[in-house]
Length: 337
Image (cartoon, rainbow, N blue to C red; front, side, top):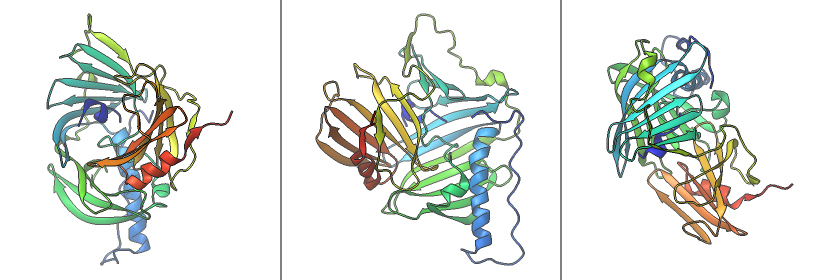
């Protein structure tokens, strides 16, 4: 996982308590798809969504795809003012630390003596993989309970999200029984092959995270090069829109950002169904490093679609089926003034 891919994980209550356990099932077996069991599964999605953002925790997790595996240490806390803090240390490759304060992220790379300031973009950032409303998610996924398993020394409940259409991938999520924190996540493509997995190998949920542990060891950056990927952490009107969105996908972010190797800023829009997200980049054809009339491809869990719109190049990418990025790319146009 690259530093750019792993960066990203709202202002919530000061002393967040673990989400209450979903209501217990009545005695005796329930049909796998009974309404009561399905309602309970949706409650689990709500707990998974909130616990990753509200709880204090520290741990080590592994990210795996068919091509690569990487390890990171994460420390997370919400302070008394309701500000969310997170520190991510990449444990493979060149030393890298990412410090997040709400939506502002600062990435320290001591080898190149650079510090980059960016805005969190919605995406698959473990353990905060669920960003939408649980009931809305259930409109587009069949949410089912699976078995109970033991991971990293904790009992966890499997929750399965089966897509109701061909525009999204299936996910299997395993959440810690007591808090709802996500311990393991598997993503399956439209051929039912697992293409991505996250899993905690070490985890501390004792609620004793110290604020000092969230500071970077590289804060003294005198003489380092400082880079700003975005000018503002607020949405800006880029003048572009995607007008042909698959059901359930909504715009969650819009900004102008700087990308490495691009001489001019690039428009960036993010769309999500609350589980999976898609990024739309629009740049001038004159400054794009590669210009294509139309390209559709996939690389592991990520699908890409590129097309020309007038004198601009549109690139759509996300961990969704090829049909999804192509549908969104076909609908990108200038916003009417």
